[in-house]
Image 1 (cartoon, rainbow, N blue to C red):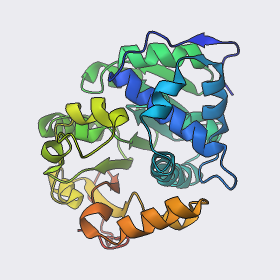
Image 2 (cartoon, rainbow, N blue to C red):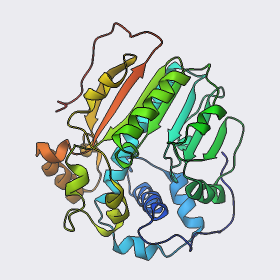
Image 3 (cartoon, helix red, strand yellow):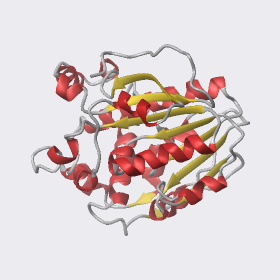
Image 4 (cartoon, one colour):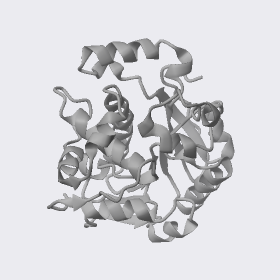
Length: 299
């Protein structure tokens, strides 16, 4: 546990900024943690929100009750994939790219031999440092993921998991390809867990009626989408597609009936179900001769 104590000042976080988007996600995870039979149970988020000096009414007015469950479902799957990797590799290195204010490093049971790195823009890491401290096995790095310099700070001799939740759509395709190549060149083996949007997403999400105010900063920054995330396997001969799923796959776990019925209805519409898909890839020194797995009908 590396969280700090005491009240912290976030009043300088600007409306519609990248920091605002991260703070919204933290707030939504905190709200979901207080619901009976919570999906994620992110008590670290709840504790952080209690300590932060900020006008959370502003976020509350710009969010919908269903948003907290979408955020929780998203995080739940990445948590499961991360836990599975750590169970198989208790000496792993974890790279949480674009970590924002997420508490994944604390809410998961990390084996003592794991080295975890939370990496994001300097401004976001500065906010994180108001909430958390570096510790044995845990470090924060304030640097853009597109800057190759941060890789020099990461040990390369261990199985490596890259988690990029809600990050790749905000990079260009060229930046994503470079990021994947640099990680493959640096590390001998591991996995990548990330999500992607369809190729038309950067255009449609900029329409005023598509998403709420709390997503406005995010939608204005979207740069990239892809028709089928499995195509990423073609970027490098060492990449192997493992599985994919819709972010809404676990909707049956939503404890509140109105929101659960809403998600069930949305899940029945393919274009909505597949709008945000989560992918898991492996990479090895030599292409592995293994069969591909696919979850719940990737498009």
